[in-house]
Image (cartoon, rainbow over all chains, first blue to last red):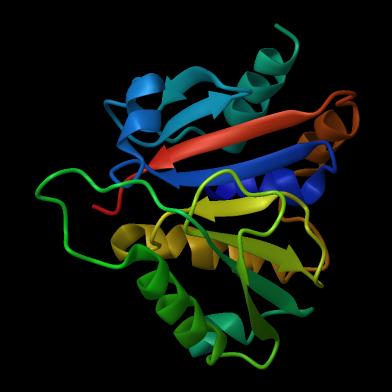
Length: 66
Length: 131
């Protein structure tokens, strides 16, 4: 979660939200949240689990240019 | 906690957004999520003079409620926590506050370079659970 917040702080292009899955079950179902943390970029589920900073950056930027 | 928050290098505002909440699942905890969120955020803010709290009803820029926005130096840079920040996830909110309180990003220089090249808007949602 912290990496997402850090990227939002570092880039005016990025916004980052933590969403408590048990409190928003409909949305969690739509995003097929079976494990946490589940990372979703622009409404498209990407991956589950914590990853190192370099990998996080690679993955969100790859998602941005899909 | 107070010691951690003493590291804030600039003011950080926490905006608690109340609004119509989703009906909790049957059998879910019998908690007023909005009131509890506000209570937790107010308690947190009492731990540092650099932390302040604002509470609003359905402010613009929020997708669901309750929510907390972390505003470094009062500026909305798009940091949100949706839901009640309790248990393990209180740590996520506090981590966001600590980072927002820094004058310089703690990301690696290479990461900052890559982010600087980003030429479109990006919304990252991270689904979390308190346990």
